[in-house]
Length: 164
Image (cartoon, rainbow, N blue to C red; front, side, top):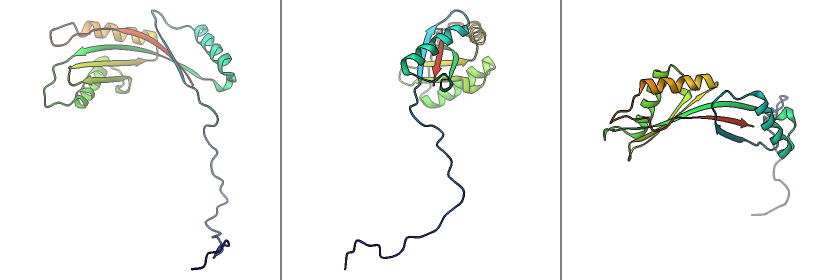
């Protein structure tokens, strides 16, 4: 066999297209910051602006490249007695659907994690407004009174600002 530095055949000239490829959808650095605190009232716009200004100064971000969103998160926990035949994953799905149905909210707004060994379930419910989150807490407290098999351990209302 003879080895040469030149190609043995001419490279293919097709396929070619006159259609250019799309430009990248994201370029540069992407920074995501999550801030949370317990609140007792609706977050006012000036607080969001203050946080955006801090991020702008800390990371030298152009105001047009900064976006923020506010979510109100209600969380709690349940103590469950799961039959051995039911997996944690099945219990999570069932609880997620049940909580969403009880509160008349989208299933996507509810996240549930079940620890199959302890029987503890932790749920979070995301709302767009403080009033929605407050109403959810009221419904949960009036619908699920403490009992030996089911008890609400904690309720928290957390405001999360996500800057991306």
